[in-house]
Length: 136
Image 1 (cartoon, rainbow, N blue to C red):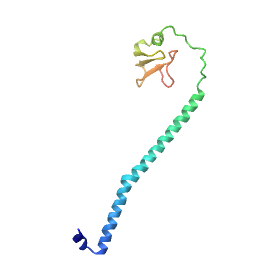
Image 2 (image 1 turned 60 degrees about the horizontal axis):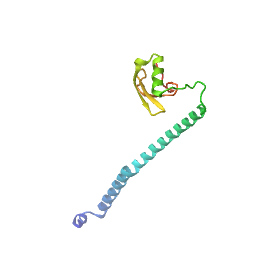
Image 3 (image 1 turned 90 degrees about the vertical axis):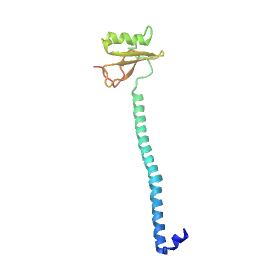
Image 4 (image 1 turned 180 degrees about the vertical axis):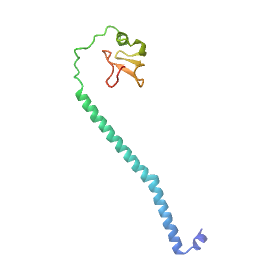
C-alpha cells in the first residue's frame, strides 16, 4: 500500500483525499440527513392534519345535542336487531337489506345495498341512518 502511495506526488494525494472527503460528506447527507429531514416534514404534516381533525371533532362535539333523551326517542320492545328489522320493513327497504347482525345489546350492524359505496352502518336506537349517508 505504501508503494502505491509513494508513486503519487503530494498534490495528487491531496486531490484523492479531497475527493474521498466529498464522497463521504455526500453519502452521509443522502443516507442520513436527507431521510431524517423528509421524515420530520412528513411528521409535521401529519401533526397538522391531526390537529385540524381534532379541531373539527371538538367543534362537532360542541354542536351535538346534550346527553338528555330527545323527545322523539323510541322505546324498543325486544332486541335492537328486531327493531331495526321492523323499521327497515316499515319503510319498504327490506329488499335492500343485505345483512343484519346484532352487536351486543347496544347496536346493530346493517348492510344496505342501496348505499354507495357499500358500507356497514350502525343505526341509532330510532333506526336512523348516520349523518353523511343518504338512502335512495
